[in-house]
View 1 (spheres, helix red, strand yellow):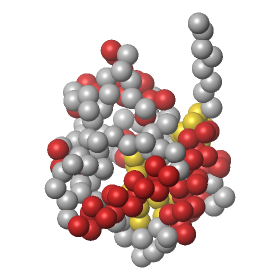
View 2 (cartoon, one colour; view 1 turned 30 degrees about the vertical axis):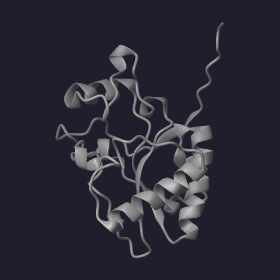
View 3 (cartoon, rainbow, N blue to C red; view 1 turned 90 degrees about the horizontal axis):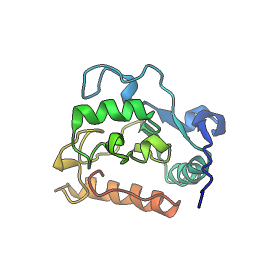
View 4 (cartoon, rainbow, N blue to C red; view 1 turned 60 degrees about the horizontal axis):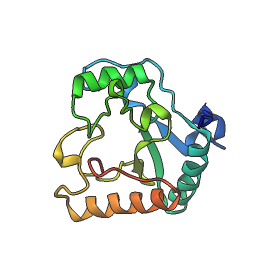
Length: 169
């Protein structure tokens, strides 16, 4: 039976009431990648329209609690996903699209993010974004503050309809 697939991949900024509500720092558009150069050259955050609706609910909750979201990664074209897998080569951190196992990033339904407090300081998390070590896993050893921050962010995101993976906080 044929299943119709609908993609509504759009620029997140089109749905923000104020562009300052979310900080977009697409890590793969910087020299700070695992290959030391950008995978692409635009600081553009694309997501599926229904993912944006869930995300904006989370943004609203974070704002009520005094936090702002910083996005480091979202939609990745499959060509970028493949190039990155070819570098990392560990499926639990970067899915391999060549075997039909593309990840949720190349569908535009995943967000790698953190939170910034009212003073503009990023909350203490277990590792930097895209560390790709066991230290970035949810089961890794964390300080009490890091665990509190991860659990809080997870609770809000899950409450807004997102899921998570165990290999990344």
